[in-house]
Amino acid sequence: MNTIIRFILLTPLVVSLLSGCRSYDDLLPNPNVASEGKSVPASLLLPRVQFDLYNGGGVTDRRAGNVYEGPWEQVMRWNQFIVSNNLYYGGKNAYDWSSSASMYDVLKNVNQMDAQSAQALGTTTSAYAALAKFFRAYAFIWQTQRVGDTPAMQAGQGLTNLTPAYDSQKAIYARSLAMLDTANTMLGLLAGTNSSAAVIDGDIYYGNNISQWRKLINTYRLRVLISLSKRATDNSDLNIPGQFATILGNPTKYPIMTSNSDNLQFTFNSAYNTYPHTPADGNNNYQNVGATYLQLTTATQDPRTFIAATPAPAQLTAGKKVTDFSAYVGSNIGQAVGDLFTNSTAGRYSFVNYQRYYSSVVGPESYIIIGYPELCFNIAEAINRGWATGDAATYYNKGINASLSFYGLTDGQTLTIGDLTGKALGTVTVSLSQFLNNSAVVYKGNNADGLAQILNQKYVAFWQNSGWEAFYNWRRTGYPQTFTSTGGGINATGVIPRRWQYPVDEQTYNTTNYQSAVQSQYGGTDDLNKDIWSLK
Image (cartoon, rainbow, N blue to C red; front, top):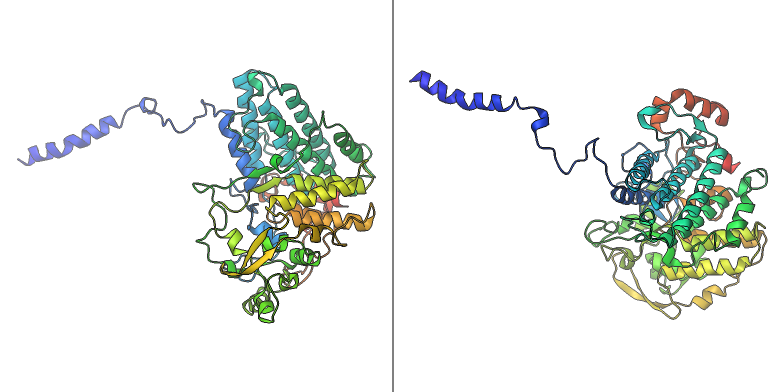
């Protein structure tokens, strides 16, 4: 009997062992996983790349130093639009970054998208190839703005080259600007044709519209050129003012954005990509609106004050009305968090407009990555600097009006003003004419005062959009002057860093090239407080 029992128990084990000897090749592959022998269509890679432009560098790969670049994220505190008064619930204010993230996650997907489209279409001249040039330029410029010299020509080769050489920042800009020019030309040749090479499937931003992609690429190119304003006169070979004037002077060859409908923007939805603030978010009392922003808007009676902020409770207690711009008081990011919390609890600061930004899972507006209001201010700045002909005042006013329109503000509109929980406190009537005719807003001409106005209004238009641009513009120009640059709350040194240290992977795996780049640029120390070439 024992022998029979042992046989019965052993039989399933033997069968299991025998079945376990099947060849790995005999097993059915998972149809949802692409093997090395199979390709992922360009139409599936494109939306991944596009989503990462919204996310920010390094977010997908969880690289050290990554920061989400959407609304209400850490970058918006460093832009000084919002200020935390509680480290745990509100987030940190300190500019305490060290190593930068990288755009390698974007670059590798762009390269694969380009290769797969070429294989499928049988040509390297396609809409996907043109977009790949734009994305590469975007990635390289994103990186060089943070660290200085960085791998570009040899970047993104994977195992083929694990120690890519560094390119100078000047060379990176020259190559990237050329790629953007080629991308526009390539799309121009494809536009209006029935070729399969002109088709862009999977486009989450422009719905496969080549014309709008051309506008974006040229608009972005103008952003890049204006970002080089400090090197415009001592680098004639880059022809920075000339390139700007050429694009602006030939809209047929170089179409640019003409309205907010051309914005490159991320739209939130209730199913997967909800707005960062929702009705379930109960932390509004831990974030105040920044003084950098409110000092600008309240001084000019700007109605964007009301879409951003609530009146400070202590100001209402003192007898001021919700219509009084002086009742809206921002907090200073340079203060210690403990002081900010004490003052906020005492009602001295304005909170974020709960009714607008916490009442819906899809949010009140899309998130601009590259937009028309900024373009208008970039053109106004270029004309003010003498780079191009035209009326700077016209573009300056277009920029202001485009920003007002983006936030849904119209003349005579009635807005309900609430407290930090959304409880209604009263109403205000929007007066665009009062704002636009304010002496501090009316353009003062192509001089230093006029330039300050352009840069101040560009900053206000960046409220909760455009990633790092508000910070980068301040770093380049010193405007707005309301931007807090010193104080115990900034960091241990009390000074905002001018750059990031190189990515950890570069320091670890590309050590020789990394050390050489640090030596040639910063005297051998990967110094956060040294200026990169484009800012000198």
